[in-house]
Image (tube, rainbow, N blue to C red; front, side, top):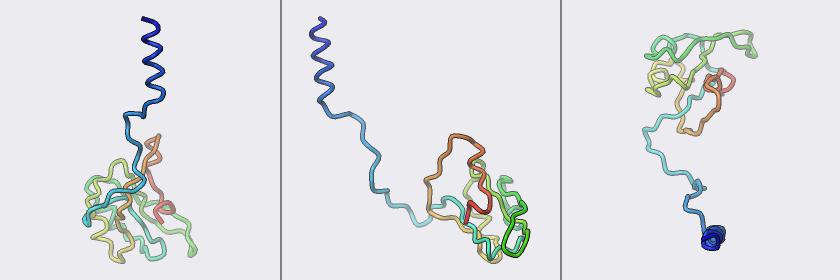
Length: 120
């Protein structure tokens, strides 16, 4: 019985694993897919329209240091975001857009809160 168990272990050591590795190539994404936000800080006019229209109160306006002084810009909590694209639709200068990037992960929920500098 011990010999049979040892033979089974030896056989498992030389066999290929059952699990598949993460694919090297990403799958194609649909044209209407909405991923993480991108903010162009230079064209943002601090109108707060994105924060006002957000149905989940995901966007808050925070003070941010820029080349021209302090401006209020959107801070986005991706943990609460519905990715509905209302914020990008209402943005007058179109400086806030949703990209197709879906690879954002974190070990702590606070890492999902993205400051304006991190959205650039």
